Length: 289
Image 1 (cartoon, rainbow, N blue to C red):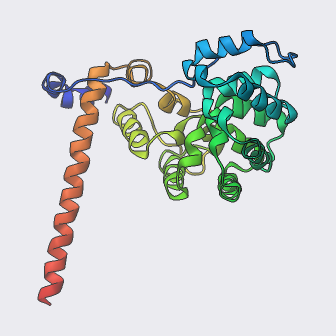
Image 2 (cartoon, rainbow, N blue to C red; image 1 turned 90 degrees about the vertical axis):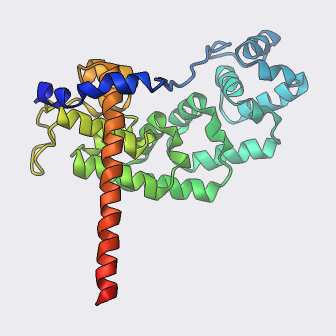
């Protein structure tokens, strides 16, 4: 099946490749080197210098502002290293009024992740401190919990897909439904992956490509979820660059996968156009009656 399917579109590869510029974009969370030992309780000039080296935007922040923000973070349980990581990842935090910083911490504490897990989340994704609407935050966290099951699972979701905070419930639900009902993926596997941070169109495209290559077969509905599967794991499908997905997961070239993407997009467009034409014809028939 693998060879037969590839033959159907390989003849288009060279044409598409000549007319398309391939841009591979791999998003990776920034990892900043801590500029102070964990037990450090004083902010020193060497710490500030290291932070400025990592993010030159911080050179505009006056020393007094550094100290004021540092004291606020320290009073709320974060050590020097955590403070510096947040400052480097989200310099705007340093310019905020003290009460706004406090409110941000209290809003996130209401999510019941626990101090240790919360600080891990905020130091990995400092932009989450930009969330200012506590009511909306709690409502969104409650929604995520409806399918994640527990507070810790919601935390795991955000550690893998922090942009869930910016997605609508409808958009998230579409992806969860596709993963569960079409791909037959169990919730624990979804939580461990970055799938929910990807567009539904990308998830569907990769899934269909694997299916047509004979490399992915949905589990039977009544199958034991603990039974081993020969399918690639979800994280291999969604947490990989296009090159890695093509070459390591699908065992084809990147050019072949890019060709499929373009052909599949045309296929979907034709199906959509046909559906519109059918709807228009049905409307004319109804009008004549």
